[in-house]
Length: 235
Image 1 (cartoon, rainbow, N blue to C red):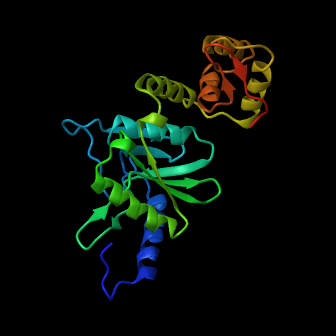
Image 2 (cartoon, helix red, strand yellow; image 1 turned 135 degrees about the vertical axis):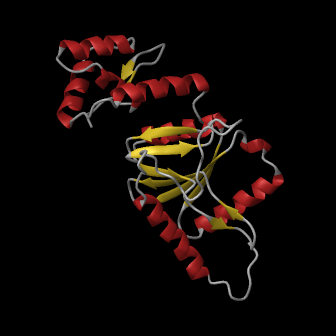
Image 3 (cartoon, rainbow, N blue to C red; image 1 turned 30 degrees about the horizontal axis):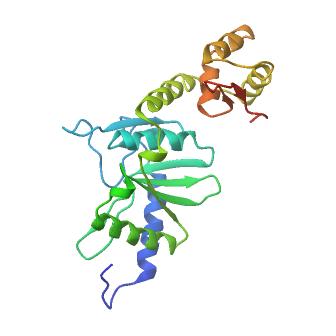
């Protein structure tokens, strides 16, 4: 970052935390969308923009690509993530250049993370590497984790479609703790070979079958292709 004699570090870092506070206080618009400082316009030619209807965020989160959508659903699935926003921070890198990191995340232990999503970290141009190194230095100096995320750790397109299907079905209803714990207790009584079996078991005990999709999405139950298993414990 190019600095001059009048640069005030305290004001610079205070501004970042002010932006974070504003980002998570920002409510959805009349269409239910939570916009960041840099607005992501939907339906732009040649871009795979989308709106992810986040239960954690209580509104739709705009994303610019299928990779960002995959990351959004992973954040929704992550039990350590409290909420997140996109394009919510404007970070000056020089007198004429700013960066708008892709994701701002608040964890359940009240810490913050900033994530950038790229197709392949190993093939980043030097100018991008330099920019991300600057961002990492800025955020680490104030106790914020900065991460680069690429397709190697994100769901494939097929996996993404499956997760979106489970998420949509599993969040049609609001489940209380009794329903969740009772469902887990019953489902743990035998091996599950597929989600249809879980649906049937839940219907037989008077629960909605979509609860099975909710439990599978949030990894409370697991149904691998080769050796079905269930996680232990209730929520």
